Image 1 (cartoon, rainbow, N blue to C red):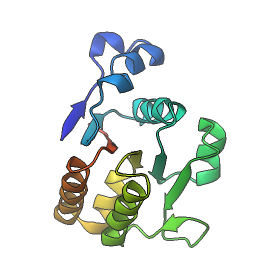
Image 2 (image 1 turned 180 degrees about the horizontal axis):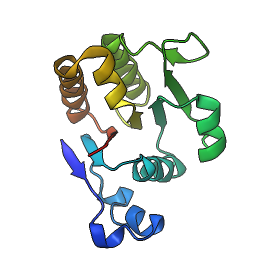
Image 3 (image 1 turned 45 degrees about the horizontal axis):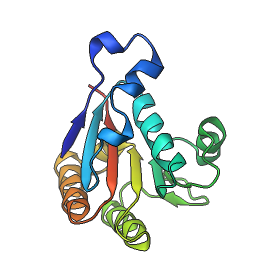
Amino acid sequence: MGWVQPREEEMSTEAESVRSAMPMDLEKGVCYLVKEKKPELSYRLFETLVAQKIPGLCITRQYPERVRRERGLAEVRIIWLSHTPGEDFHNPTAIGTLAKVIQKFSEDNNGEGVVLLDGLEYLIINNGFLQTLMFVEHVNEFVMQRRAIILLPVSP
């Protein structure tokens, strides 16, 4: 599992923090924990990779239409982690099927793709730390065998 953290001296502007971890530095087949208070760097990395025609899947606590509008991700599948039924939502307590969704996305794209999972803390609240850790380990093991990239923003 990799770790991405902007250096303190580079945090003065958003552009500089993004430049400190550009996608060409990200290895395929790795699950990255991105240490940041708000998932700005994670979304920028995700947007950059998707712009390079790498298939993307965004799993988030934010309302999908808002993410599409604010991030310009019209062509990306966005799954909403929510207990409220709606289009392309996923119940956060169904963590096993969430792993299967990520696996299917990777398999459908020949083992490639980038997945942004913005909602790790929410999964911990709904499933407990140990269950969520096992989920992350399962996804990490799956990704290591393929060429996908997983971005997991975590608040310090």
